[in-house]
Image (cartoon, rainbow, N blue to C red; front, side, top):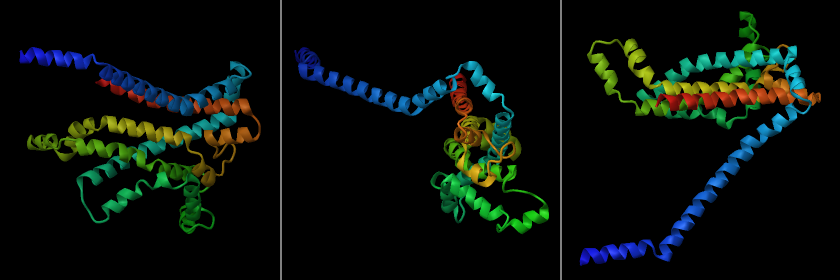
Length: 288
């Protein structure tokens, strides 16, 4: 009798108007939140992409493709790609080492150094470019040294690489630190017990476990390098055909009212970055 009474009470409560209305409210709240998220992301991401597509194809696909075939824009994109590849290669090595040291070692000044890694998020890229000019410019602090070495840093590719290295510093490190923190060191100890050297253990045990952190770090670093503007403008000068990157070309093309070329270059640059992010997510889902 007690069990039957309890079951009957539960069924009545389940079908009661109060419970039904609360379920409806929760469902509507969920849909409203989803709509807000979709609208928010669409407004910030999809709307600019649609505007770029409309602007690039205003005079037809042929005009857009023809504008991308200009020597200046090809040179600008090559500069952008080369800078991005150099930056990714450097951060892949030194960013991994930095993340490793932060997770595995404790030393004086570690917290301060860890905080300094995030400085590029707080400092304007324009300020970063200006700081590099103060160091490597004609009257910079390090000008006598680079004059002796015969190296041109400011208003040349090396200065642009340094500027991009600065603004992309946190991405690789911040992607790898959580992965290293969650990594089970018992696997490394087991490999060492079996006679593997430290280098062999890293390549065979540790590095495979870090692959997704590395992939995301590389993707975000390269995408950020492709879109850098302020720092490379200040330290590189944006010399047409020499130190002009894709973003600097877009800025110059807009200033000179070459709208089709500007929209087409911006659309291509945005699509490359979008494909990088989507590709890394697809590879991760495929691996699961």
